[in-house]
Length: 507
Image (cartoon, rainbow, N blue to C red):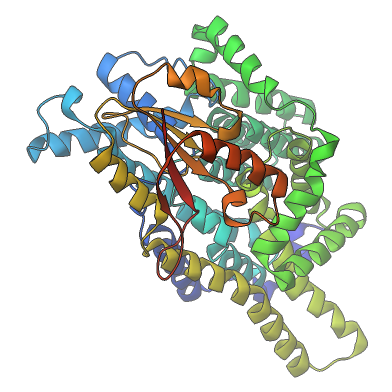
C-alpha cells in the first residue's frame, strides 16, 4: 500500500485561504517589535555574530577566526549587512566602515532570522501534508504560535536558521523517498550540510535522508548509491558554506576542541538534562499540546513498526528522540537548543488530534461528536501557546531594567571604563567601554580588578530577587556588596520588566 493510497483522498487538497492566514499570523508574531532590546539588551551571542560579520566587511578576510559557530552562521548575514551599510551611506549615516557602529546592523540581521522563522512555518505545512490537509493546517497553526520559536525569531542567533535547515532536510528526505531517485537524496544531503554549517548539533539532520535512503526499497539506482550521494551532498554543502573548516584547519580544530571542552558529559549533580528539556517543552507547549505530542509520538512508534507509511513515521519519531539524547547529556544546557525538535512535535500533536479522533470511527461514534472533539482539542492545543506568544510580545513593548542600566552607564561611567556584566544582564556599547561578560560575578578576583581603573560590576542573579530561596548564593553576593559600594539598582515593578540589576564600583 503506497502513502497516497493510505491517505484519504478528500483530505489531500490544502486549504489555501487558511494557510495564508496562518502564515500572516506567523509573520506578524515574528516581525512585531523585532527591534526590541537594541542596543541595550541583545540576545546572548548576537554581538558575536555581528562583530565577526563586520570584521569580514572591514578586512576582506572571510575567515571568521572563531569556530564556536560554523561559517554559514556569518555568511547568511553578510549580504544583508553589506546592503545595510550601502543604505546607511546613501542616507549619510556614515562615511566609512570604521564609522558604522555595530548597533546599526542588528535589526536588519534579525530580519533574516524572522524571515527564515516564517519560512519554517510553511515547511511544516508541506511536511504535514504527507498525513493530510487537516493535519497540515493544525500543525502549521501550532508551530506558528509556538512561543519558543516566536521568541527566538526575534534574535540574530543560529537556532532559528538551523531549525529552518533541519525542517527543510526533513521535507526533502520525504520527497526523496517519494521520488526514489539519487538526485533527490543528494538534495536532502545538501540541506543537512547547510544545517550543520549553521550549527554543529544540527548535523544530526543527516540521519533523516540516510534513514530514508536505506528504507526506500526501490531506490534508484540502489539504496547504497543513494546513501553515498546523500553523504556527498552533505559534505559538499557543508564545505562550501563553512570553507575555513579546511582552509584554516588548525584554527578550526583548536576552536572545535575548545568548544567541545564546554560540552563534556553532564555533571549528575546538575540534574537530568532529559527532564529539563522535557519540562521546558511541556511548559512552552502547554499541557494540552504536550500531551497530544506525546500521544502522537506513541502512535508514530506503532506506525513506524507496523505501517503503512513506515518511512515517514520513522523519520518523524526518530529525529526528535536522537536529537534530545544528543543535547541532554551536555554540560551546558540552554532551552533554545531544543528548537529543532519543535516542528516534529507540532506535527505529532496534530496527528494525535486528527488521526487519533478518526480512530473513534471504529466504535460507530457519529461524525458530529468527533468533529466537536477535534475542534475542542484544536482550541486546547493552540490557546496556551498563542497566549504566551502574545504576552511575550506585549512585554517587549514595556520598559526594561536593562534599558535603564544601559542609560545609566552611558551617563555616569567614563569612556573606556571597564564594565563587567553578569549573565548578559545588559549590553553596554563596546565602542565606549571595555566590556566583559561573566557567568558568575561572585567568582571574580577583586584584587585583579582593583588593579584596573574605573571598573564597574553589573550584577544579575535570581539570588538578588529571592534571597530566601537561594541563601548560599545570596551570602556570596552579600560579600561582594560589602566589598564594593552599590551605585544604583534597577528592579522590575509597575510596567518595568526584566531582572534586578545592581551596579557596583570596584575601588
